[in-house]
Length: 270
Image 1 (cartoon, one colour):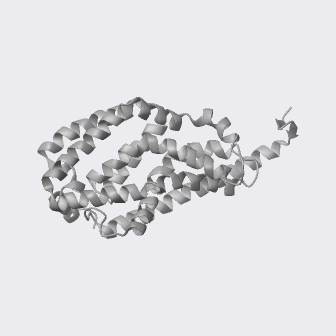
Image 2 (tube, rainbow, N blue to C red):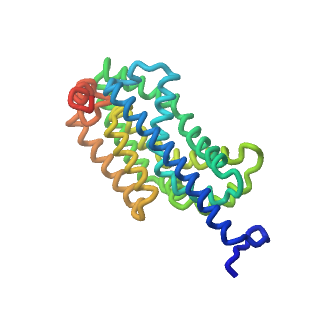
């Protein structure tokens, strides 16, 4: 009775250990990708400093930077989903899990052009229209705070926190890109959950390393901590408080305050 039945056929006890080894290997690859992304992001941020807007980068370079940054910030929080998804794969697990991760990253990479436009606008406002930049900073914090408290945020967060119910849906995907498409589908829900938090990077500065780390921790806790749903609402309220605070202290949003960004650059990690 020690054998396990799968797909109508008995499986030897050793098969469970073998599948566990493959799973560990696949998750090690995912963790390594996230670690490498973080190392490169830290180096890149340290080299770029807290420059305003797009930091002089063209669209292609900015999107590449944004994709790397999203990989660093988001992959740690998607690890449990990767763990669950890898258990549904019976052959070529590492390659197919990599396809799933690529689909997930692609969903976030697709937002790179929007992020470039927002960063460019923020840079122009900070340089040429400080009053409009100040109003925009208030609007950003207020908008993020409101979204954090909406049912749509709750629904998307619930998908990320409880992905088991979506495994059957992903099992119905067909074709050579089915694993990529499953990752992209999960990435879209994750985007719905976290896009507002990423907009905060416009206020804090796109390459603000401490903001990246802080938001990555918040995102991971929202998805993985048992009080994540409550935390999401707390973050929403905190963002509304910051919307009021930035009225009086514009340096809270250095990405939309040129003087504040230069001050951070002189005291930051450079």
